[in-house]
Length: 192
Image 1 (spheres, rainbow, N blue to C red):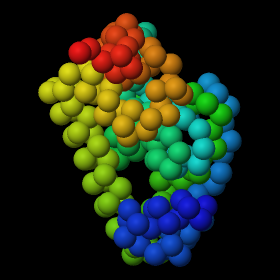
Image 2 (tube, rainbow, N blue to C red):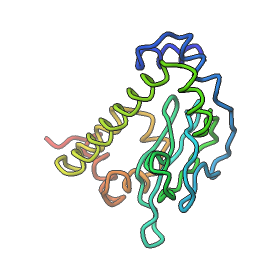
Image 3 (tube, rainbow, N blue to C red):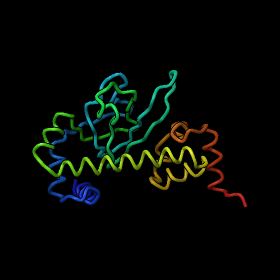
Image 4 (spheres, helix red, strand yellow):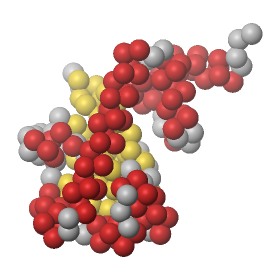
């Protein structure tokens, strides 16, 4: 956890010891490809921090999955709306790869917050990052071309283009799978 502790300490502006206290409250869970972390219709009562692996968070629309988000190493995963509002989740969260994840439930997180003042800072900064990420995604969907959205995704994590099936990338970017093929060809063989 050393590298992760340093990474999180820097993001949250806390000490590595404080990060260690925070992460010590988490339990570890090993999931197989295809396993679910959170189901629609059930209140999401836990937050995960991915140690290794890849997960997808999808909405179900007329029986079809619409990718809301991907989560991978060193990122948090939850249906955060359900977690905060305590309403049944509208999302399915499942593993695209074997995944090791640290998990904490709502009660344990609340208890930890009462014990340690720095947890409020961690929570606030994590919420701010989540808001910024969702704002950037919404803005990009409204204003950017499909090519720019794809480039932003692979710039953030180059390995995702190889780890995620094309049809799921297309769903996340709100385009058809064949559009991803055309974008990839243009990027590899740019038009003069």
